[in-house]
Image (cartoon, rainbow, N blue to C red; front, side):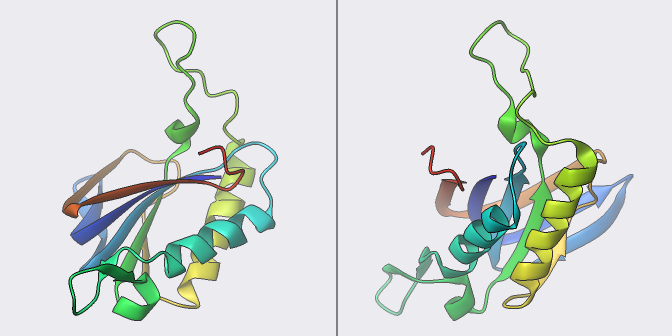
Length: 148
């Protein structure tokens, strides 16, 4: 499972011209599911999301987590995080999980994170317009297999 985490002042998702979700200060997380991922990968990603210390404390040091800062989370599925462009010019998505299983694990991650913070979501397997005001900018890459 891969995640692109962006600390933001706000973020929102629009589907078919209608805003479907929005958050104030917190994180926008783009989440990709790989073939073979399990609930253990969901647990790893959730734990990192809610506990990663990327929010400033009273001394302006990145020392607070999403949980400690009271921030919100916008979690958006994005299978293209497993796009492979090492050969040719068109990305291959052979490593991305099939939609039914990917949605199951995406929803499981949403459920896990919702136990700790307010979570907004995109609509799985739709064309979404995602926007945010990146705060910092702070952008972190995660991989549950610790590939980076």
